[in-house]
Amino acid sequence: MCLECLFMYGKMYRFGFLIVLVALLISTSTVNSLLNVDSRKSKIEVTARVDFAEGTNHYKLIEVDNGDNNEEQVVTYIRHEFVFSIQGNAIGVEWEFGDGSYGNGQITSHQYELPGHYIVKATMSTEYGIDITELLITVHLKGVVEADNMECTCAPNAKDTLIDLQATQLPVIMEGSVSVEHDGSSEPCSLRFPFQDCHLRATLQWTQDDLVVHEEIIFDDTFRINELTINYTIDWTFYEEGDGIQILLETDQLRDWHKPSAEWYSTVV
Image 1 (cartoon, rainbow, N blue to C red):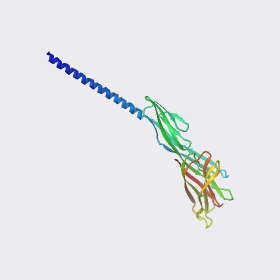
Image 2: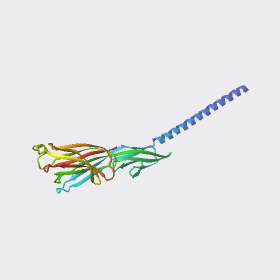
Image 3: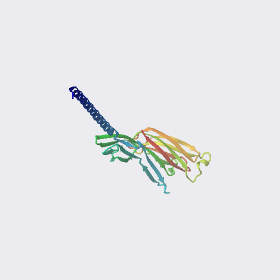
Image 4: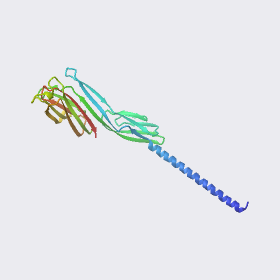
């Protein structure tokens, strides 16, 4: 073979070697880039979730009359159950629910005793280290009371009933209603003679250590229907320890037999 041919063959060999080397470098760089993307993607996808960020606890009180004016109070309290879960590849998970309670596991649930705002922290162990996610949870309250007939208390008012509205120690907006329904042996309110109309006075009372510190009359009038409903709204009320709020229902007529009930919704703000 001539020298010129050998020289050309060597150049072609070196050129091919360079092409193979560059291809290998590009391939290696691409693989490393993909691995880095997958790594970042794995870290991003590990997070904590909750099924619903807001829930409502339900409070219900029923007064049962045993015929001796010494009613038995039956209370039912149903707490909303929040379901928490992890999305992604976590080796272990520890939960702090914000009310002094703790849990663990990929899926868990929790109920809050009191309305309010809670910060839930999930500490997740992954192959890349520790990830922490925080979730804001809000618990509202819905209350219902079915009281026995308003009882005789004589002067200065004929009969009354007191309903506790379950004040919570945080700012809330309370929207509610109180109703009275004729329930007795006397003639219904709709059949009364003139000047014998049924009567009701409804007063919102704010208390501190069981003493009334402020009150607001929301209804004080006669009526000629067998069921009367009064709506009310209390905006941005903040309660501290020892504070309370209640509704006082009164009538000035001994012949009025009314069965009270109340329903309200406390929205945490």
